[in-house]
Length: 230
Image (cartoon, rainbow, N blue to C red; front, side):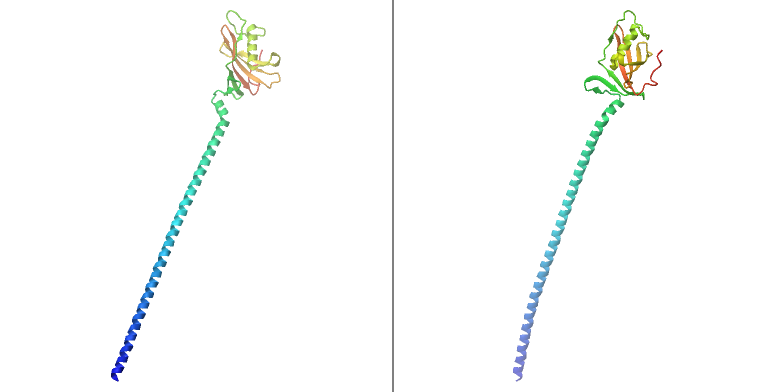
């Protein structure tokens, strides 16, 4: 009886031990599976994070490139606008600059007409025409500059003045005609009869040839620009 009881206990212990080993194997398999799943999950999480980071970096690079391209385009547009503005400003200011520097401004119909400014506040502009011709003189012998009406020299002066300003004899007022101080020239203040055209004309004597205009100043007003003629 005792032997049978001992064998029964032995079999029970063996079954218990076998069951325990089975349970341990199952637990080990389950642990391995769980660990594998954890590792796989961590791998995909890390991979997703890396992909997201790469995508964010690509986005930043693209945004930076677009920003730089935009700034470059804006800079180019701004530079173009400045150049166009500068060109327009230069075109608008060019005549004034030429006049302020007393440089030549050529008439569109005559390249020999030179227009400049003057330091005289009453002078609108100064004209020099290189095509002005000498008024042929009828005088002979030694030249004497005269300022008396009827004298041939004086009459040739008046003709030269009229030719310079292109005013007819019946449409001109001689406000003053006098020596220019050199002994070889004269200066006259004249206007049209309606006084819409006002000039100061400088002429000089060419030996053995006659009088020739050398400069015409377009005046803003007559008053104060001449001495009363006797």
